[in-house]
Length: 59
Image 1 (cartoon, rainbow, N blue to C red):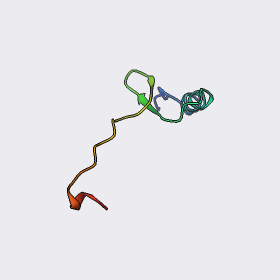
Image 2: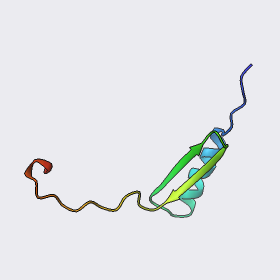
Image 3: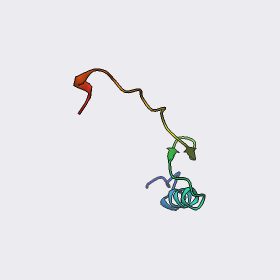
Image 4: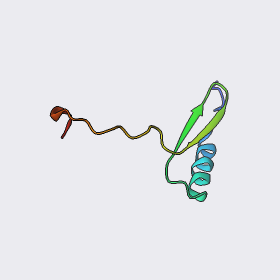
């Protein structure tokens, strides 16, 4: 016998649609399966990195 899903596809679909309906362009959706929790993080994930003077870093 299998264990029921802690987070189902409909939960993820609702989270994605909520982010889109709010007009948010950048968001990260994190599933915490151990606690059956969905976390939505809004905004930039990292500050932009300064330009490097190293020619090997430039593509």
